[in-house]
Length: 258
Image (cartoon, rainbow, N blue to C red; front, side, top):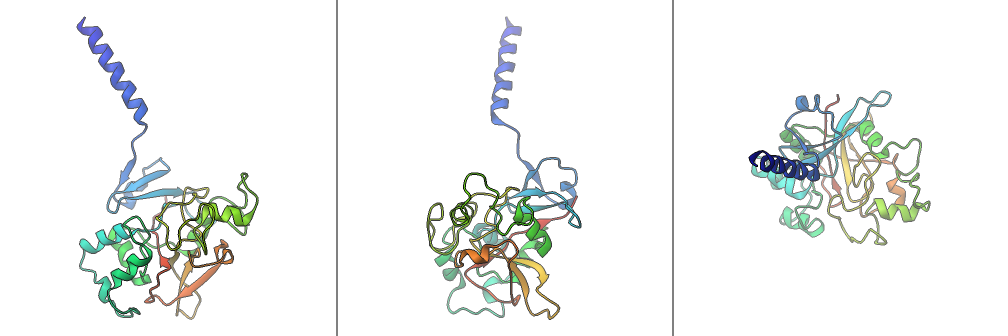
């Protein structure tokens, strides 16, 4: 009798485990990533979900935040460091900087905005990651598509570029899935082929690189909620001085190659 009771308990336990699915892999460093076989992980320090981006040509494989860094994640960074975000030289705003942030990104789930390149780099250093190189960013943004103007052109469900854009991107105006006048909470739109959200629209994203040999501006990519569809082209690039801040600009991080 005891044997059968034990057997029933074992079966019930195994059944429960099978319905829960595989546990999420949590990592703390780039070294730990080297032994991971899963395609998605959780970065312990900031809780960011990261996805694996495969190697291609001159690009080694790497991991990228699935979403833009959020207001909540950036506030955690500030609470654990002495970084003086609100007093940085080069600030171009009057009054309280956080009131400006909340005007366009009102919750902890919205993308962090008004972050300069220096702010973004400081965050990346704190969390143990880095900003993406421009080549890495564009490759990841394409989501596996090759030589396409927009990252959603091969979506079989809908061939109209404008209609598809409203599924994948929060950009100028509102229509369809894009119902946000300003920034949308990260991950609100459809992910690309690699599982990355908001690689087009929502906020422009800082890259590591200088825009050109003049070294007077850092590259930003992806377009924002303020822009027309033209600026959402995967290959479109723009620049801003690294100390510059804006309500339509944020960032995401990457971690090293396998």
